[in-house]
Image: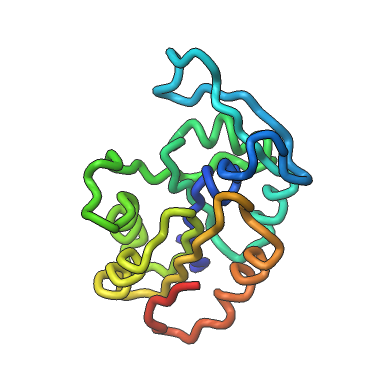
Length: 177
């Protein structure tokens, strides 16, 4: 088992800035039309913007990468290849409707998956309630890093993620960015 902290990766928001202006693809991103599981019968595939250099940047971070996205296993077949990522472990998530008011539906499952291991989580849905829940229920260090879904991961986000594992004291309480 690796001693590296986990990095839980969401797709829509951090990797796909889906809230960017529809008529203007963000610089450095490529456009993909994809039909993940559950979208096979839709009239049009999803428009997904991905930045191929993000894969190399993610692999350079001091983490074990784990998909934490509603794309679930489709992230390995549709997103990872565009970014140059190897097949990653996938957290199988509950349906979004199972979340308590103001809490991301992923939070409890990610805490259980981490099982006390330090982790960082990048997502556009992180709230103060998620941070509070992780502080109460996760004994290891945690970085909950909210990403603007109009912008996706930026240089500052990669810097923060790169610095956090070495900056956290052993036994540190969970923190948010």
